[in-house]
Image 1 (cartoon, chains in turn green, brown):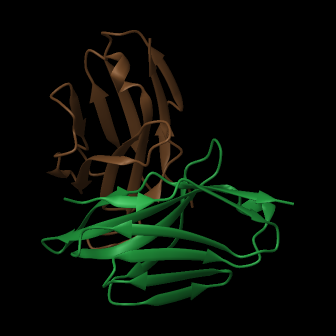
Image 2: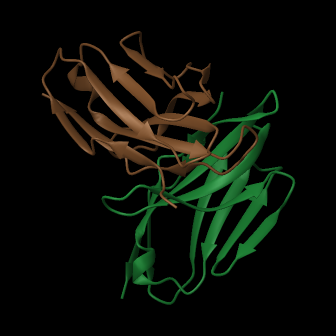
Length: 114
Length: 114
C-alpha cells in the first residue's frame, strides 16, 4: 500500500538551515512534492522532483531524493520566521499515462525562533 | 490570473442536511481533484476529473458523497445526509493537463456539521 511518513515537529533558530524528512513506500512514485501550508491558508506548491533525479535546488530550497531508501528531504537554507508553517511531503503515481492523485504525509510543523 | 477558488469558504450545517461545495479551477486547467483534510492530517484524495469525465472516485468514503463536472470546468462536490464525521476542510486542486505534475490548490471549504 501507499504511505508517506514525516516527523511531526521541527524547531530551528532564525538563520539556521532546516531539514524536513519524509519516507514513502510506493516504488512506482513518479513525482515527489513539497507543499507549504500557512495558518488559515491553502496549500502552496513549493517544489517537486521527478523520481529519476536525486537532487533539485531552487533558491533557498534543496530537495534530495534517495530512491533506494525511499527517502525525501527538504532543506531550507537561512530559515526565516516567515518559513514557519506546516510542510507536507506528497507522492504521485502515474496511472495509464495520466498523473493521478497525490498521497500526502501528515505534515511537519516548522517553528522558527528569532 | 486567478487561482483556484472555492465556495463557500465556511459552511455550517445541521446533521442530515445536504451540502454542495463548489470549485472553480484555474482557467484552462483540464484536471480537477477533490481532497479532504481532517485536523492535524494531510489531505486525502476523494476523486478527480479529466475534463468532464470522472476518472477515479475510489477515495469517496461512501455513496453519500458524489461529484460532478458537467462542462469540464466548475465542479461540485455534494454530500447528502451529512454526519458529524463529515466535518473537515474540503480542498480542490487543478492541473493544466492530464500529464501535468503540478497541482494547484484552492483555499478550501471548512465544513462543520452540528
